[in-house]
Length: 439
Image (cartoon, rainbow, N blue to C red):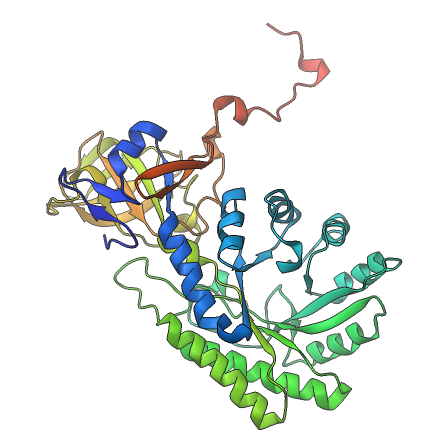
C-alpha cells in the first residue's frame, strides 16, 4: 500500500497516520474505523485554492456529497473554499456548522419544493437548475421575495469520458441537466432569462468522475465557451460564471494514473481565457467542484481480522468486521483498493488472500487477491484512499452499526462522528398498537 499524507511506519512496525498509531486507534475507538488525515485534507484544499483562485479569478467548491460532516464544513470554510450540496440534509449540515450560505451552491436533479424553500430560507448563494420543472417551481417560490434567486443552468455537453458508466454524466443520455447538442440547453437559457424572479448568472457542467485524461477537461471547457458565445449571439446576454464541475481522478491502486493538479488547473484556465479571446468575450469566472481528490486520499479505514478460511488450491478468504456496509463501492462499481496490515506494516508479503466483509452476501468482497504478510485473526487491516464516498454511502444492512469517523493530527485523535450504537439502530422503529402487549 502506498503511504500518503502523514502516514508512516513507526519503530514498532505499525502504521501511523497523523502521528497516531493505527493499532492504538483501534484499541481506543474500535473498528471498523474511518480515519481522516486532517493535515492532508487541509493540504489538498490549499493546493486547489492556490491553483484556481490566484488573483481572485476563480472559485473552488468542495463537493459535499463526497464526505460531509459538521467538522468537515468547518475545515472547508477555514480553507477558503465554497461548498457544493445536493440535498436538504447536506444544506442542513452546512447551516448547523455555520457555513456561510452565500458560498453554497445547491445541486440536484429532483429538488423538492421543501428543499428549494429551505435553500431560499437559508439564503443559498446559487441554485444550479437542472430542468424546466425545477426552473418554474423555483421562480414561483421566489415570487414575493425581495431578492431574486441567482441560478446556474446545468448543461450536459455531450462528452463521454473513459470512466465507469455509473459515474459518467456529461453525455447526452443522462438524468442530469439540459442537453447541449439537441438545442435544449439554448432553449433553457432563453426560458430562464424570461423568469422574472430568477437571475441567470452562468452555466455548469460535469462530465464525470475519476477522470485521468486531462484533455477531457480542456475539451469540455472549449465546448462550453463556444456555447457561451452562442448565448451572446442569440440573446445578447454575457455569461459571467462557468462552473466546470469536478471529476479529477485519484490513485486507488498502482493501475491508476492521475494527472497533475497544477497542469489540470492551467489547462482549464488557459483554455477558457483563449476561447474567450477568440470569441470576443470577457473571461468568465471559472468554478470547479473537487470532492474525491480532496477527501479520498486522506481517508483510511481500519478493520479487525476475524475468520480466515482456506480453500486448498483455490483461495484464502480473510474476513474483517466491516465490508459493504461501510464501503459499498467494490460491490457497486467494482472499485479496487490497496491495503496493508497496520500491525505488521514493516513485514514482507508472503501470501495472497482475498478480503471479505461480514455481510450475508456473496458479493460482499472488499479486495480480491492482495499480497500481504501472514494474516492472522486479530490483525488490523488498513485500507487506503477511503475518504471519498465511503462514509457517505455507508448503510445498516444486516443491522450493522455505522463506524465512527475520527480526524487525526499532530498525534491527537478527535471523534467527528460517533459510532452508532445498537439503540441507534432501532431509534426510529415503532411497534403498532395491534402488535403491542405480546410476551
